[in-house]
Length: 246
Image (cartoon, rainbow, N blue to C red):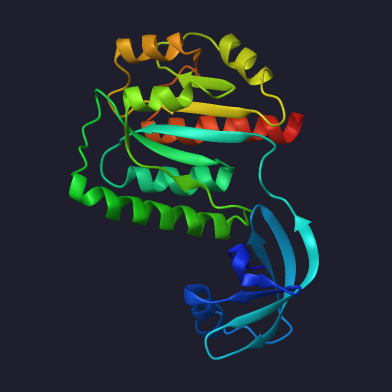
């Protein structure tokens, strides 16, 4: 069943008024008919709706059952991703949104090869946000995660220090005991940060700085993972733990 996101101002009298690109998608791409059902997500809740009518530039959807489903995790995962090469960040955004992250922040780290021109930051972020929205629709999320502005490592630490738990997968970490212990600290309602290094990994000083604000260095196993694999793996670990245990 399809899922669409609508702003609260487009909800009135038990109906959603869907306009813009979603109107075009429903009418001209999906060619949906009156009576067909789909989900509409608005401000973190998802309602079961029925297509009531298609007007000139608006689809009117009648709410059949409010708060029909909640697919978001019982924790808030905030991914801080060291800027990777080529289009790897697009893959990371798509897959971690499917897994349940609440936000993704690209971070310019010491060993990041990619440098984003200031003139391109706005268009880059718009594209990344569009990828997050598409992934949220596909995975039937009840909210669209935010892709934040690119931050320096120092700026990122200023944000991450306020989270309840901060995980730092590091290739030099040994054994899975620390990983198991860190996951066991996850409780419902917590904010969990994940810091992932770029292709070249972390500088030792970056690890020291993360530890100073309470970061927990963990291992992802005995193999060396690519940056995109590490981001997806750590997010999946947190997702599975929270879904199974909370």
